Image 1 (tube, rainbow, N blue to C red):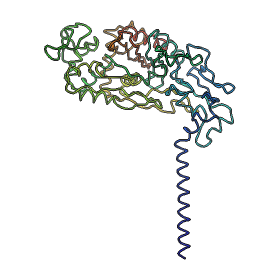
Image 2: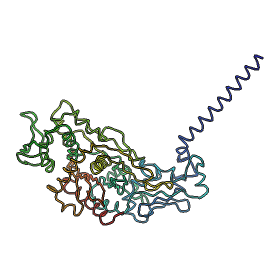
Image 3: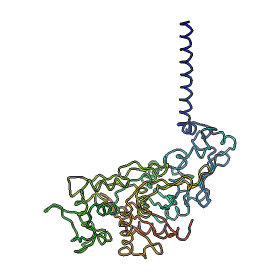
Image 4: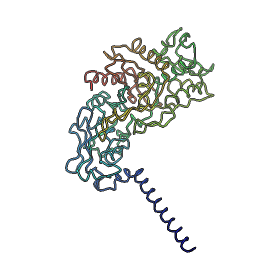
Length: 458
């Protein structure tokens, strides 16, 4: 009898172990199946050269085919300017551009699903179509507008989150890849999508964050006046924070923003203190891991010093150790324009029959609605009273320029902004590396690509 009971226990233990193994196997396949199926060692999907054999087509929002598969070979649009302009969103098939669509969505392009694996691919000979929100013609416009400068340009619909334009330079042609792309300094950063993976000193666009903190923490900020004589001296006898002009006495908060006065905003930053400034920045996504849907963003960094007032003042005007990701700041613009909610930019229009509207919007940045409304007024005032609406014809733009000083090189040129037109709910970000004043290159590039969308509504 004892032997029978003992054997029964062993039998039950084997059954439990078997069932546990089945559960573990199913869970592993569910969690890791698509990664296993789409590994580059899978010769059902990849050739020996790591080229995708049967990936589905990728098209833009207007139906332009960007990439497709013909006779087991990956082929690309015939327009070399288009190929260069969309390289970083498209990505390569070798995974060098790890944030590219062909890498991030290789499971979708292969037709993988949990039940059938890649059976659909084997049956049909090609994976399903993936439709991007991207307007490739807009990308060509932005690419051309950047001219000789490297950097990043992006435009998205702040009401829906659709990413309509995303360009990163330097770039190259996938079809005719330069042999010296890994050695020529001209291609430094060519594998990096600077819209989502770039980090830059922001310069005066950071005054938007300082302004938000002041609005929320200095009750009489709109009643005060400030003086600027070209320099804000923190400690007597020492070099202070240099302003870009000798503005005047009696500047209001709004006028200080219009004129991007370093002296005033350094003074405000020091009064606010590092803790409040950092808290405001972090409430808007700084020092946090963010995702534009499935695409990871490089973390924007803002940690102003607590005890060094001079360095704190520089941090308040976008210098010091502050670093910003362009896509993140695009979302901040979207939050201001949208009354407080900044949706994550979404590059996918349709995937596996699921439309972007069905995917839903993902909030990346939240701003107090009252603060957002006041920032909206300030950014509109910048255009009306300082930059001029003639720089952005018919756009009803709000925005802020930035001229980010870089040690040993020319300044980066920044513009961030959005249109208030009901029929053009678009936000834009542009950073042109070593291009000088934000009032020049970045403003011109931003206006050019926004004018394209005004003339070519999607």
